[in-house]
Image 1 (cartoon, rainbow, N blue to C red):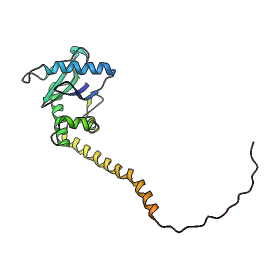
Image 2 (image 1 turned 90 degrees about the vertical axis):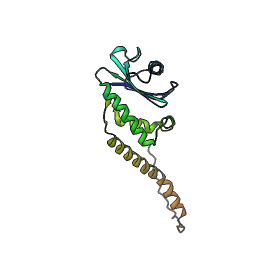
Image 3 (image 1 turned 60 degrees about the vertical axis):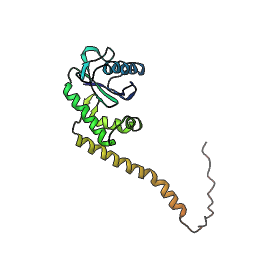
Image 4 (image 1 turned 120 degrees about the vertical axis):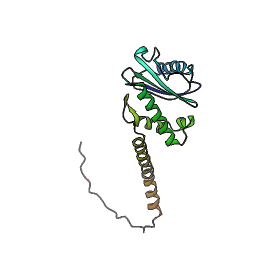
Length: 187
């Protein structure tokens, strides 16, 4: 099971954090710092797996990571997960981001955090891998974009309808003077 997914830059600034186990905010920040120190000091031509830090679960958990340009993609997994399978999942995640943002960069993760989380939810939910087929994931993302565009059109519809009614020249209809009978009050 995946315990957490971290994406941070070369300076250790987190750009995406997703934990599938509860940690309070201070512990999450310590996990990001510890993970950054463990991963960043490793040479680029060494193995992309290492034992998890003391905060994330110790030797029962592994960190599987890839370093792309200025970003580290780190998955914290338990011993039941395949390291090569997680490396492939990281590759699918990065390629999907690349297709959605046309050469993904750190700024895309900052300014489109909702879309990045949506893409991640198409791959992993609750710490379990849902989908690894990039074509299927991209299809779901396109469907979501269509829905968002339709909702944007619907949210503007009431304002357009009100403007249309105001612009109609309706004749002035006299209002009848109706008198209501005096009814006893209930006390």
